[in-house]
Image (cartoon, rainbow, N blue to C red; front, side, top):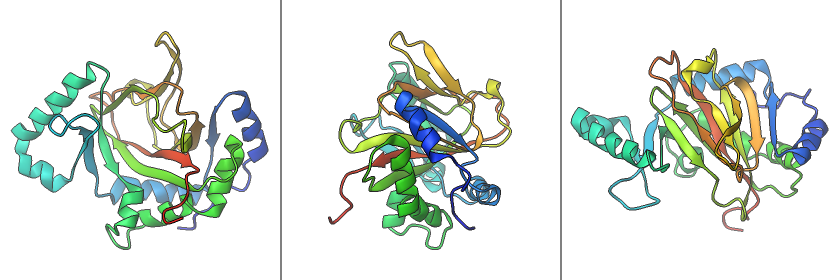
Amino acid sequence: MELKLNPNIDVQAYAEAYQRDPLVRIPDIFEPDTAEAIHEILSKTMNWRLVFPSTDMGDGQVESLTQAQIDDLGADGIREKIQGVMQRAQRNIGFLYSSYPMIRAYVEQWDAGHPIHRLTEFLNSPEFLEFGGQVIGVPGITKADVQATLYARGHFLTRHVDKGMDNERRAALTFGFTKGWQTDWGGLLMFLDENQDVSQAFVPRFNVLSIFDGRKIHAVSPVSPFAGAGRFQVTGWLRDDPPAGA
């Protein structure tokens, strides 16, 4: 897998668009073969963890369950946890999806030799960080804080703004690696106005990068019970805090 951005992207045009409205969607972000390879990694090789706000460990804590932990809980145990997640979601507190924390996994050397680590390295390379900084008009981007995500049936992310956007986080980003998605399947990236009306919504796409100001209220609508596939993304933030150890 040769990781490089599509050389035909007009960076200046997207930078100008972002200055007018801090939300841009860049199609064909990778070369076709690269995008296909990333899709294969996400759809076939990941050791996913189910993540959701904890109902046992206090506010702000996140549970992250491996498949082995889910199996140990059994059907009744996981059902009880999910019921708690749904009750909190009624109050606009919550999320439920599968995740692979790419930065933590890389630093702690999970899954040695897994190809996802090459993508982590590329997204934190000078090439990509400079590209991201050019688009959002912020020099000195130091890292891409990213995770891989899979939204399956019933998964969601309630409306929110991203914490840290007035500090180190300069923009949110999401790479789409979802094929053949239908609007009725849900899983739309939605932006809300001050009246909580949906001002924009985007169907999951393949090989598309979205970059936006995380202070925009946004959400991911629930994936429908009849969705015919998984929603695969790599999401996170462009940051300019000093690198670790600096």
